Length: 325
Figure: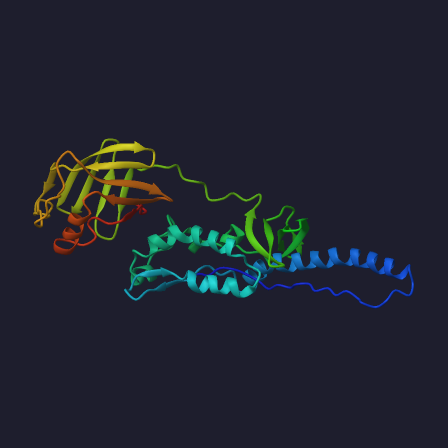
C-alpha cells in the first residue's frame, strides 16, 4: 500500500505604466531594472514549481500508489486518487501523468489478478516481479530516505523549457551528486513538470526479453520451451503443443492432441460451431510486452463458448511470470 508525489505553483504578472515621461533617463533605468528583475523572479518560479513534486513527496512520508480492493474483491492500483492528487498541485503536466500511467501499467495489470485478501497476507517481496515499487521508495531509488532535499542548478533553457537538479540531504549535508533532474515546460504561461530523470543511480536492470519459462494466470499455467508449450489445464491434465516462433517476442501455438490427461477437459467440444480448432493449425498468437504475455486467439467464438460452458479463464488474454521461490 503506497502512494506517489507532487507540489504547488506560482505565476507572474506584469504591468506597464501609462504615465507620460518627465525624465528621459528615468524610464531607461526602470527598464534596465525590470530586465534584471524578471529573470530572477522567473527562476524562483521555476524552482518552486520544479521542486513541488519532491515537496509533496517528503511532506507526505514518501507515498506510493495505493493498492485497494475493487468491487470484485481483487486488487486495484488506485491511479485515480494518485493522479487527482498530482493534478491538484497545479504544477504537474499531463505529459508527466501519461508517463506515470505507462510506468504503473504492468503492476496494475498483474495485481488485478490477485485477490485482495491474498495481497494482505502475502510475504514480503511476493509481488516484486511486477510491483517492485511496493517495496522501496521509487522517487529516491532507495529503500532508505534522507532527512531532506534541496534544488540546485536552476536553469531556464529557453522560453518553454527549464530544469533543476534535486540533491538528497543527510544530516544537513547535500550529496555530492544529484539524485534527479526535473524537466519543466511552460504550459499556458505556467511552468509544469513533464519528466523526472534519475542521475547517478542504477535503474532496475532491464531484464532480457525472453518468452521461455513459466507463465500463468489465476486458473492455469504453461511452460514455453524452444519448440513446444506444455499447457497445464489442471493438476492432472497437460497438453503438449508445438510452437512456431515469429520473432524474439512473438510465437504461435499450434493445436494438437498430444496429452497426459486423466479427465476430459472439454477441448474436443465443437459447441455447434463450424470454425473450431484444427490439429496442425495455429490456435493463438502470444506477444511479450513489458514482461506480460498477451494472447490473441484465432478461434475467438470457440474460446468464448469454452469459457462459458466448460471453464472460465483457461484461455485468458494475458499471462504473467510468478516468483518460483
